[in-house]
Length: 268
Image (tube, rainbow, N blue to C red):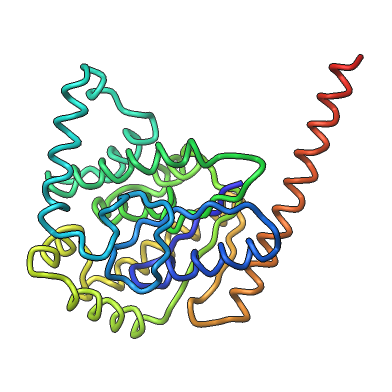
């Protein structure tokens, strides 16, 4: 079972993902936490990351710049298969197509890693929590290519691998802007430039919120339920934990019924 969190930058996705994992484990669930945050963000939940050691405190900007080059060379050196991408990678890259080569390289790299982790995380006997999954990737694509139509957005949202539970993490605009200023102040100049190159800066935080609103509306219209929580609201967080536990109980019961039916069929 996969839980996919999405929301604007600094809304508290990683912090809530960590809290959610802890609460579900207290209930006896087997939980894998996949986070893609930066090492200097608050939260400290770096159990299994999309960017691996790039999230560890002290990981230098030099490594952030150099690692994609090494990965690309390694992938190209193995065979011509580096030219072939997973369907979900190509779908998202086409959706977010922009003239910025740097943006597209970083986005492709992120989605490729996400696709690999998502496949291994899709297990019926455990819960996998992504603080930024395919819904957030669609938000990034929309911000890179604001002219994308609702039709293409919906097609992407419904064609990509589906999470069992979608959770939107919210925070007021002024809180988002304050947290984002703190984040940017902790980065070195090159790291700050990398963030700005991806459109992560206070001037367009309203664009991020608008993109999340647009995706949420399209998902709701398509019949996908969304659980909403706030990083500063303990009541909404507990309600979200309870809702996810309920979904898990239903999925687990259904899985057991299928296993029993399969076992009975083999005995006959």
